[in-house]
Length: 125
Ligand code: HEC
Image (cartoon, rainbow, N blue to C red):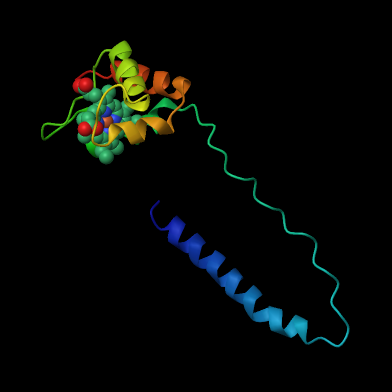
């Protein structure tokens, strides 16, 4: 249902505003209010994703949705797995000159490159 998210957001915003409004009142209380229990801290976001589709989505802007390229960009969908891996490594290691891929390729580990290559090679073009 599309209305659920905005409604929940509005609720959360309302709670936030109420909390912000209540804070100055607490500060002025004659007896110091007991320290609030430490808020649970969010776990730091660590990029350990091994989800191939998620990783491959980073390529869609330039290489097309699901790697099906338009406008003269190299196609990745259905491309040979080993070829993709070799090109990504060549970009990353500076062996293949590039305008942008040499920078992008540095953001991926060998394992991630293999996952991405595996993913695209299995998409029918
Ligand atoms: C900002 C645009 C952009 C993004 C995002 C991008 N690419 Fe590229 N890609 C290019 C361009 C441009 C080339 C041609 C080489 C160059 O000039 O960098 C290319 C070339 C390639 C090639 C060589 C193709 C061939 O036929 O030899 C591969 C493989 C490739 N990209 C894989 C990827 C993968 C995998 C991702 C996602 C992790 C990705 N690219 C994300 C722009 C992009």
